[in-house]
Image 1 (cartoon, rainbow, N blue to C red):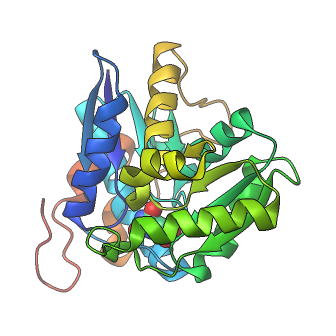
Image 2: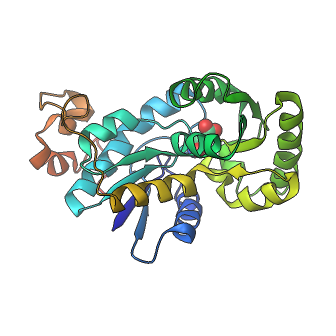
Length: 263
Ligand code: 5HY
């Protein structure tokens, strides 16, 4: 099976780290292809970033449908474009926040999220409201480290460990959820040091998609996630309105400002 892991931001080095984490848990018969969109923000740290990451993300789902992907992981903790991606994809689509929060509820009574910037906490609470029963998410805590500094800042691990410990105390929780795809590589070490289950969404979502594909579960096309109706789209997004059969061809090349962004 082929799982397409989409990093909705456009930083290829982060995609490589996400890919390594996903491949580390994928089964012998699973091929993980991690991709970076050709358009969008270098990192996602605001609602604006998240909204503008969606066209690039959807273009990668559309390309995956053409290349025969069996399932998808949306590797950004805001789960951007999740419902839209499910309309386009035949196979299962799982967001890393969705997977991590569900896994956390199987591992303990209440979880705390440790994330990057405080301004993204509202989104994490919104998603907890969608995915988890009331009271399961006990708190969201930010280490105030920008997403792209997670790769290079040597203080990340001790600061995340310290914040996780304080979150467990203040929230009375018994599980930690890591609130950024860029924290995946720290998961085992943080768990070792804080002594409770620590859930990373990249690996949790990869295994969840692998399980769903193995079960033969695909996205239902009966109602809400039926293919989006073709219709005229104007401007730079014109290609997105094409029928599914020709949508990918109409997306290439997108001429945003006269410079080609063909992949
Ligand atoms: C992520 N941003 O997982 C989110 C994390 C965040 O570019 N990849 C990003 O801070 O919301």
